[in-house]
Length: 434
Image 1: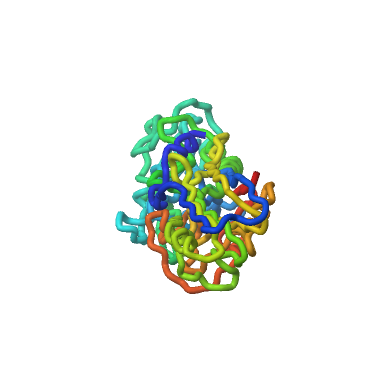
Image 2: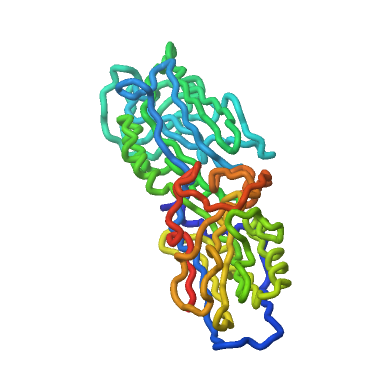
């Protein structure tokens, strides 16, 4: 898919890049059997470009939106993300309403939520698959086939039929609900005009933004290109089934992992955190909120019982990007010198969150035992920042925001949570000792 082709060209520069791996060893010679073992951490998330999508319709049977009626779409968005939708001009052969790509902008340049009438961002489009007849209730469906590209209808269509501006037929109103959530109300205002029409059930979507670029800047259609992905079903018949299935297939999770902190220790409890306690203020917060492991690494080096500390940035990108299509996700490796009784723990940020981090549960793992240890990894909420929809939060640090403080104990991130359902841990991060 076109919207996936360029994702790997960016690196999230907001995640603070770190230097080379840092290592600290005890002064004493290791006791017991010493061996070399390699730690490998990989982002195995099969990413998707849309953070959210869904459908909308009217309340009656059939579920069209008649003149004077309205429907709503509730969604989350970060700064730079936009809402796109498509709905049929019902009394036409193949016309549809949709915002200009990438969609309706919901924040201004300063990151303030936009509220009120945004109807001017909605346009009328010709799907290019049918010869247009004079619009009206008596139109003959489906009509004569055509094979043109999608084009905006600006005053008249290709056959010379006249249309009012889309903003005179559909009123779009934004309301900000707080915590990055919006509601868009679409009202059919075509009643009594020369272009009176019902609106069909439709489809909506919100694209992820990463490194300042939307991952799906043309989520539902591309002007000047042939229709695709089921849009014809909406444009010709008001049937949103196929387009809904398409956007659902590309909606899901997209997140990088921050440079990985790894610590080898012996004779002490896990020095990174303990579930049920509040963040100790030693640097875990900067991992969980910003992806910066430097502060915690420096602190861990001062602890008795800590044998070695490493910070592992991915080559080129620093962060570990997820899988995109057939391209593998980011991966880092580090050789460890370990002896009997050594424990290992890691920590890395769920990059598109407010303060979530992956880490080794409990008292870490046996650092000398080779194998896949992904089953020991859990996703925790650091309790230091108010949560928002992952990848669609205006205060998320890696989406150019400033986290809102809270003061809660560290706890597992529920799944499903209040915002979404995440993949299983082993489908997001793989950790291997070999």
